[in-house]
Image 1 (cartoon, rainbow, N blue to C red):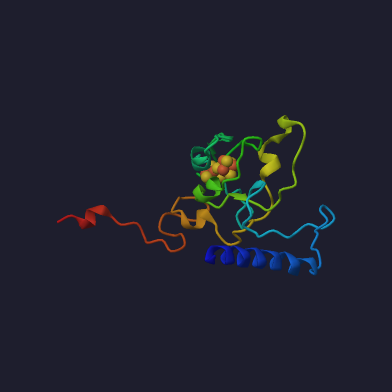
Image 2 (tube, rainbow, N blue to C red):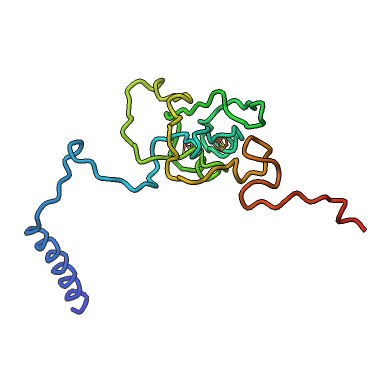
Length: 178
Ligand code: SF4
Ligand code: SF4
């Protein structure tokens, strides 16, 4: 008898919730006329960003490519005369990408970033292969301040070893010997 009473109470509370919703105003979002703003950290279309001084952030270190679980990133590495590395070509196959964000996590320079732009569906699967010119943007994306070459300790036009931000002067290892 007690379990029957419990079942009736559960049913009544369920119907009560339904009954309350009968008098609520419906919330219908008319997509695509209304597009719900997504958080900045949403994971959709990928971009390659630039440093605050306009230089390409990607140093062609292959970390994003190595960590990608579906192997959809490929590139070539090259080096300028001043020692700054870059990718002459950089390719992402969005038909394979699962938008996991691991490439962004692995990137030491904040170059590769996922954005909330999810509206790039196409019928022709071959058009999902994006080249560097389709990926590279003229801004810093989510990371407005970071400039890898000002922290990296690499001799470039920014400075010699020991002249970068929060970097100690090089130590003469012989000075540690007895
Ligand atoms: S989001 Fe994931 S699947 Fe897509 S390119 Fe980055 S690591 Fe690869
Ligand atoms: S996007 Fe980032 S992780 Fe990928 S190669 Fe360039 S610097 Fe390295």
